[in-house]
Length: 238
Image 1 (cartoon, rainbow, N blue to C red):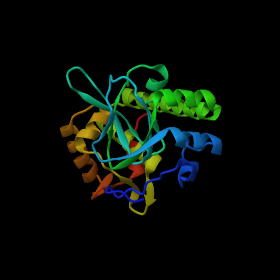
Image 2 (image 1 turned 90 degrees about the vertical axis):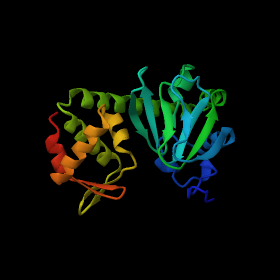
Image 3 (image 1 turned 90 degrees about the horizontal axis):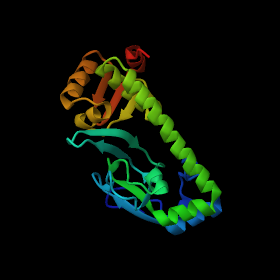
Image 4 (image 1 turned 60 degrees about the vertical axis):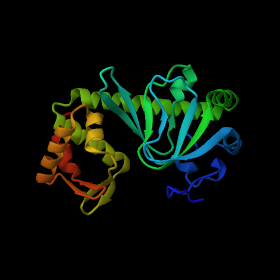
């Protein structure tokens, strides 16, 4: 089915063409059938907010297609993007399992299909299907290790330019496409959002991007960015 947002939706998890590629969804038929029975599927436009930091957990959200930014804010209103969540990730699982408020806010970066499972249904699902419990634990463990790597990288980087280089290298490792012009990325974040990922200002990111372009470390064509990975790696000290 094609939606007004030009998304080819997957109505049934059992027949999803991406199921085997997704860490959480790659489960046995009986488990997936049960998940189909308890989920609610919706398509969200860019900018839609799934949940807000500090809100009591209503349930968990599974991104079927698209991406979301997870943010946290200070009392002074400063915002930090802690992660860009990709298709196949489960959002809100730790809050749902613990019964504590969501620790971040989740906002869609592009038109996306998302499955929602109410907290009580999700907890019963985990209790009755050990496979789902294991896959949830694997996702939470992967997020923990990712957070540890990011904290180490940002905390030990010597300069803002190194932080930006590390961010680009991480994106390249995860989603980069090798081309003759370099590692190709589809970048949908604004300069402000990139700044929020590395804890700096929009003006600093704009200046650094201009510097990277001048040194031919990156090249931007529309929404695509081409990275010279060896040049970025040379900027990383640890």
